[in-house]
Length: 368
Image (cartoon, rainbow, N blue to C red; front, side):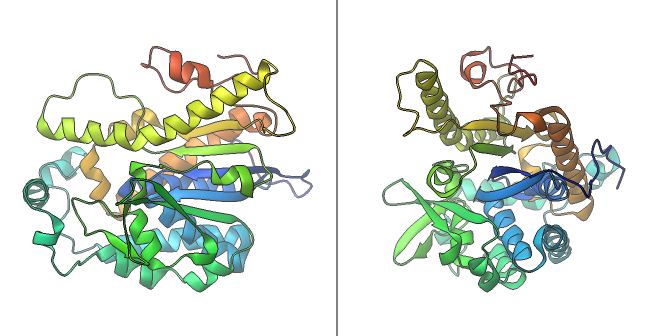
């Protein structure tokens, strides 16, 4: 791997760490970007993760993080995350979903020229997983079940863990906490309905949590003392231009859908903040939530949706570096904002022209 510039190093004489909550989005293999973010944050003694909320790949990262924290603290979590992603890549070594020779030659990471992917993509539009996969084979179920010790996850007291799934019957989000988690809860959170059969938990069918919570922010409000939420954004909010091919249209529809619930929660947070600023809410009953975001909009947008199925170790390493670098820049630019205010201009996020990245704030709180 190439070396990522590090702005900060550990100092043995650190002040009290700044507590944060982490909100981890889903995005298939792009979850390795989140692994890079987590590795950078866990390496910094100025930061303490109080709780994590994850959906889909974010849920997987959350339980792997919790398992590692249970026995080895932050260093154990970093080692566990690396081990997990390496094992996932090793397990997919013989997968038919691999890049074409042309893509390897040109340095592209998508699977758009892979004939197996193209055939599978077409079939998933024409037939349901109940027709194509009647035995409900899900490789991720075996991977997660074999690589994650859920007894350790359930015993984790170092951080709060919340993962989200979509109740198929009601269309509502169901949030599961660490104490009740099993392999099936994580698979429910990752269950894309055009690929896999719904996952039943206590007789209730669930699909991927990204449809209604990607991820959920509200569990932090009652289960964490920290007012700071750091969102690890995987699905690009901005993608200039009009998609024209069928695949481009479908992929952009998915991005918008999987971001919509998060945008709704952020709009509610911004609305409460505005009412508090106007003195219309009781400060003893309503908390001020400080929103931060770690993302690489341009870098992730350039990868293409089909790359979310690419499990090559070289690709995971690239995503890790991107996430590590994004987190490093965030800490360099906005560490001092944690505990004091937002580092994302929520008003402009909703009311701006929509053609730039989520607008950051300068250290004094003024939009830059």
